[in-house]
Length: 256
Ligand code: FPP
Image 1: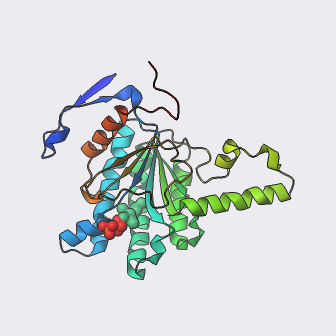
Image 2: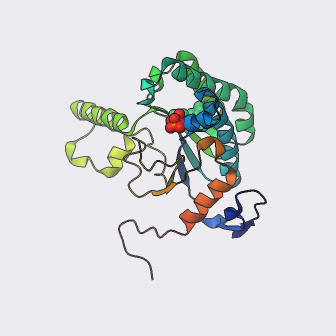
């Protein structure tokens, strides 16, 4: 099934995007970068950049739901983000709480399932509480899975997995011989999710920054100079369009 979108806006490059609705990526993961630079450009405090970034989250979650994307993982707070000034960390935590509180009914109505990856035990207890509340409330929905990466780092996730595997071997619940890629995947925070089909990064940088290191083995990468607060649903559609026009071979050969 094909769907034609007409964009009557300044992003003229993106009009008439022809998406194949039968080939929508199952899992989209996004590194939401550029909030600070967006704010700086406008001579605003960095926290207002993050606030504007939350508006983009609202739009992109809705659009992913409309397009029947199954999983959307957002890199909201990395294990390295603790190095930022205390005020910025506090502001980010506050935004997370506000988002969960104000958006939960709407997300529930949109049939979204809220989940998270990362070690949330280091987040303020109110964040943990709101997060668990949102996950619990939406657990039986069957629409888009909104997966928030919070205090998440790929290396931290792998370290955690190795420790759990070692513990299970020590307790005779696992043997060294049976370890394979599937077993390792099952020890990751993402254990019951498919690997991301596409990883989007905004604001021009072209690196992974410790995001989904194991899971991205065959993900397509898509970068844009657009800063996260300026990223709109037509940019998402453009990313999906480009994804649909790539040749994914997973190490094999192109099908003739
Ligand atoms: C990167 O921009 C963005 C982040 C580190 C945080 C992303 C968080 C939000 C959009 C809001 C809070 C999250 C939720 C789920 C409500 P940057 O600050 O690194 O930008 P810069 O590179 O331009 O400085």
